[in-house]
Length: 382
Image 1 (cartoon, rainbow, N blue to C red):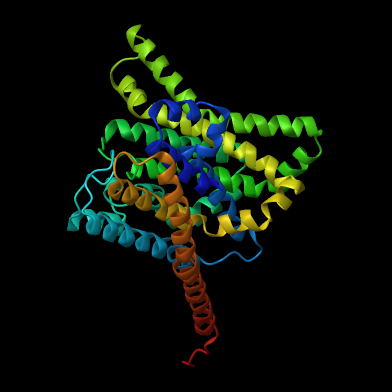
Image 2: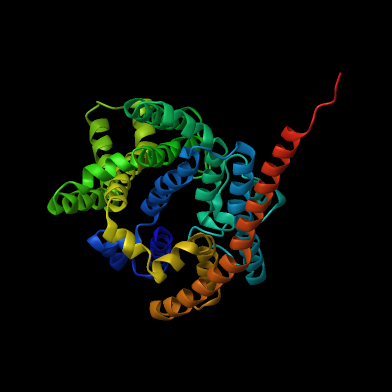
């Protein structure tokens, strides 16, 4: 469902008047169009789901895990890049707002396909920044789980906060033009994945604590989490005002002012959003009614195709905004975008995403069986 929130966020941002968009974003209904917040929620959820396999009596080996993960993430990712590139070149599209303004060169394509270094995600598919960070973290994720499982909760939280603050400080020492794909941010997202690992580690204990509370307490906890999650961006704006006030009063100047005003506001927002997402997940994990709701056919289908929906929706939206006249009404854009996006996303899920997942599983099984065969080979006598 997080991917649907991202889709609606971009649709509202690009197709509605600024005032009506701003009113919606500041209302309680903004939970349905919370794009950046939904990505943080997904990072926490990914950490939770991925870590469960490593907490089994026999966890997967590193290489089979990595093969499955790369096949699962990279093949649909690369397919979305190809789709966006063909669409952009065939339409001879120029800039659409702040997106698609970067021309396609070999260097730009290499950055996107190799995920190396810091690069602008606006050239092809603006949402791929999160996949770049997730792929990088997937490489070290088993080691993160290994550490958190063996540390006490307090030490794990301290470690994650140290990573987060270190990432923020690195922004001050190593400036980058492209905010979303730099390695400093990758380091910061370890916090979100690590929180997911902690939720998986203590899921039974947390579920027991929440389920034993009165219904009013559970509802209050859920609403508190949703409040933090939904209005974390508002805290970001207030933090900016605070930093400017401290600068005027000469309390915060120089390095720390520029650090906090340029990057610290985002980090404050993400931290609060992560706390809210974790709180919501704790309540949902312990709720049988929520579990039954999520098992209905529509949530299940949206969950299965959420990755393709996330990857393909933005190029489709930019393509429509390129070919349609500027006076096209919002209703017409929505009427074209929604069915087109869901059809293409379903086709991607059916013919790209699912086969790539099966391929990764097959290759991982071959690696495991090959390792067993090598281990079982008799050694020659000396």
